[in-house]
Amino acid sequence: MKNQDKKIVLTACILGVVTIAIGAFGAHGVKQLVTSQSLATFETGVRYQMYHVLALMVVGFVNTIDAQTKKWVFVLFLLGMLLFSGSIYFLALKDVLSFNISFLGPVTPIGGLLFMVGWLRLGFGIWKYKIG
Image (cartoon, rainbow, N blue to C red; front, side, top):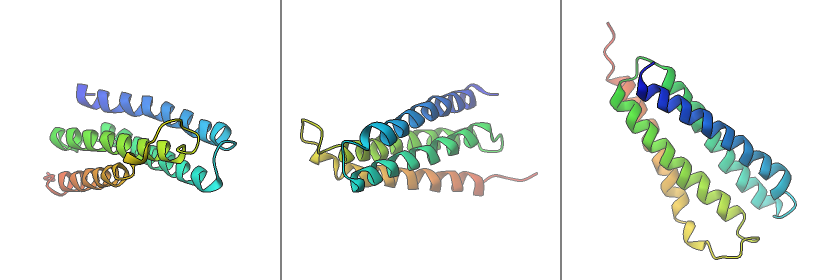
């Protein structure tokens, strides 16, 4: 396994643990603090984060994806998780936080866009892969 692949897989493992912890916090701690709509929003952040953790795990293990594609997908998915899922977590908790987080509203779609660009970059890297 190459160093870059190891970095991607280990990061995915760590983020998997973090995602499960955040999901458990949502299921057990957040449930009593927020509305059902805010809880559903929180769960959306967890779901998208886990989808991209699993995708990173696959990217790290697939040898036919070139290093440049892996690098870009890794960065785009990480930034997407931070901006999309991270902003959703805070926005779902806005009623219980003691500070104003309304500035995060526009951040969520930027994170979603980074996810989409990451998937497009992955697709492009696979498309340009030469068989044989």
